[in-house]
Length: 288
Image (cartoon, rainbow, N blue to C red; front, side):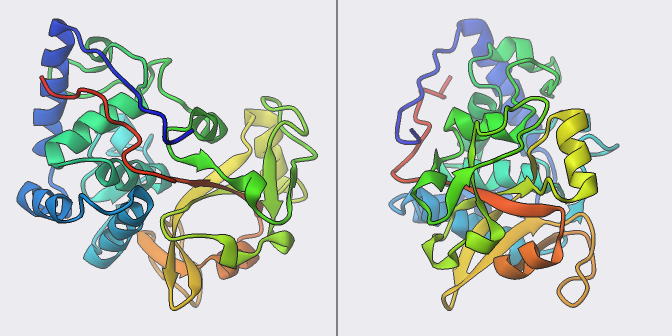
């Protein structure tokens, strides 16, 4: 459960690795300065985690000027070994960054949270290089979104509590049919979704390209975004890789009604929802 406390005991050698990661990532040119991040985090410490996730999603949306860059592409956060992606985002880096900031006390702490969740269980000294970059090829890093969901580090999987939840009938070459729940687009009741929910888009097995991703690569999740509520409407804040005519024209961090997104983007036919249901999820001793 997301409410469980995750304790990480750092060795003396690992403390140096954590410090390297912190200093390297704080030097990355971000959409807000360290001082601004620290001020915002100080002012929202008493807010529930889900509300903080929503607040950070809104900030990345409002700040603008984020360039879409797939993490594995040249200059992407994975290729560069970054925990703070700076002005380049993809859907996963936006998920990482908003949830890590929502669980942090200041900008330095956010880097520590990133290291403790993205590489949960890893000795930091085996993940962080001498210059402070991280190695996303480490086996502790979860490469599959369904594995991330099952870890509980990105909120509780509340899909079973939603109307229309049903077992996925197809699965993939990694996950057997019936081994996870999702809510089909036609059965989704948007009013059941909350501010700060994480919406994981399930590949539609009736869509040829999406089915191929299931069969060839084992994927069942193709995209992820953060739910915000505007005048009762559930909207998706996400890092879009391509325009959606009539809604946004550039690949960047954008907002769109969730119902519109699911209707227009045919390769996704269902969602899995995770939710932070309490206070700080990760509260291990991250200090040197």
